[in-house]
Image 1 (cartoon, one colour):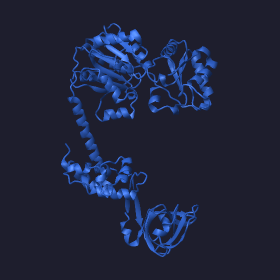
Image 2 (image 1 turned 180 degrees about the vertical axis):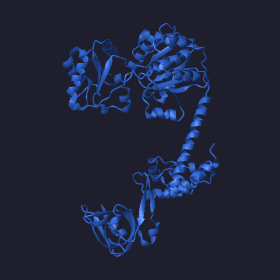
Image 3 (image 1 turned 90 degrees about the vertical axis):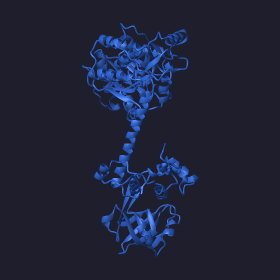
Image 4 (image 1 turned 45 degrees about the vertical axis):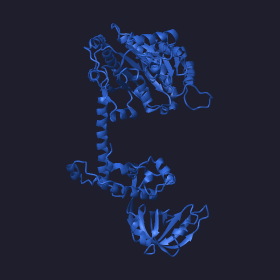
Length: 566
């Protein structure tokens, strides 16, 4: 429950004086709905002003405050601006320029009167000028112009002056709260209290106040993080306990030794699975770091504990790659791994449903098909989601809801995009890192080459093919439908390369049928074709170690995550 003391801060914004329906809509565009939102709508910068009696060239570029006498006005005519000629206390001349004036200048700057003016002093044609002064007031009101004025992010119809007035009203709603920061820390940095800090930031004296508010934000963030993690641990799932005989047999059958990072990550994951609170852990590691082996070890713990495991992949190509890899790794183990995608139809699909429901399938690999309504697991205890950034929260939950109790979940990625990092940062996921690669991994040499040298690139590919090598050629589009696009298309590039290298060139893209994609990939893996022209359908799940070169055409048209995956 929120303390009653804080209720004024969380009142709707239209409870403030001066906020009617029109202003409320304007503030909503700035995501300001409550009083507290307005108080934390911080200035983006401050305008520093210098009070002067006379104007001199050494002030050029500064925002000044000066009292001026209006001499005369040259009215604009729609094409020419209005120019107000004025002089300072020593008779130095300055021109105040107004575009699209329509009589405004005459209203605020009547000839013969003195006014206090604020604005940026510049020079034009050898003469001093101020374009669109930001303040023009009666000389007696000159002290009201702030020497340091906050500038806010605005929206159409809402001026900086109007927003400042509303914030002044909101500041009156601040409750008197006890100090929550450590007294020694406050004294060390000479921080003001929370309420005073808000006032200082909005009235142009940020200094220690901004640091104080930043500390408060980080402190609240950490408290929220701990609360989320505590709530996550209170959820009741199922502890998956086993002696890990299957895991030991699996790792013992591998033709290589696991890296230290893999061993450490397996230990972290199995430790979480031994707890009743459902695990939600991110396994992060570069392509080739061995995430699949770590995931399979965890799935085998679930199987040995009497449950089933599911592995969700974003594309059919990746799902089939995983199924083939897992099946090979499970050789000699009495564990059945099946695949379910949109391609499995009729009797084959019904048989998978039946075997999954009665527990004959221990591990199911697939695309979105594995969490459709018709799919029922006997006991789904563990979930692996590969390339987690390709799935939304609702899709993860749809699969998790297939378990009688919340299953343990491992999500994997090679691309730590901001959304993935946010999930770990704000407490939804713990993290394991594969921060070392298997021995023998060759470094990747990346080069940027202008398209004017495309012929040189093709010649290099030709030399690679002559030596028996293989290469990918990736394009951003499948085809150029109207023949006018300047974006590289896979079908067009395939045709060009085929005239040069004949049947050594293959093609794969998302519009092809599943069988045709499999055939193209199989031919490339077997060496029947040596160049595979493709779109980002090969972004994940393609494993052809003999391919040592990749050409990415028009790389600027791909996102950072896609380039990293490729």
